[in-house]
Image (cartoon, rainbow, N blue to C red; front, side):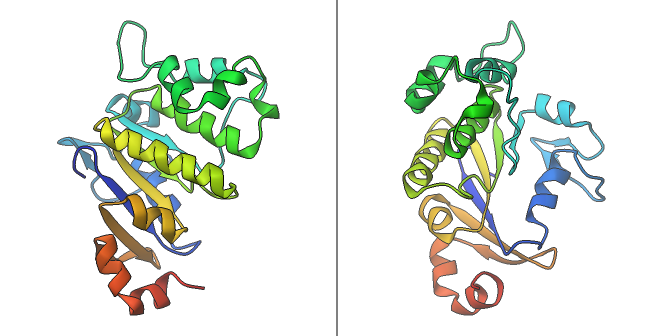
Length: 208
């Protein structure tokens, strides 16, 4: 992936998209090679992969429910003594609702607010590549638009994004490249424009 590039991985449920990003993050056993900036990631523990500059936002919004919004964000912060590209102020500027709720326990946030919090907590670790699994699932259209703006803000800061999505609209609008997965293998790769022109691929591998 190029610096500041958004790449989307598309496909129906169960084809292996989430397993792929978990394998990159060291959360499932895998074979082969996973290289990032010239370093082999396969075989490393998840925290070691994070130290290589890879961030991961899981589908399940794994927040710490009894901690406040701000405490959740600080847990994701880059190690002491190391300055990153992002600060608490940046997170609150991007999502003002989180600043309003900064002292509230994360467990009482709405689904959309929890998604914002999970995204921002990962970003506080200052990754160069962030893998995001189904960030818009179950969210209202207004929040989906906020997530799209967030991803574009990452791109503009030079962060590379691997977006796992089912919703074609957001992926086609913001991605530079798209991959379609079917039965554990990549069945299409190209630009959003090329996927729009590939009716047969969409019908066989994406449309219900």
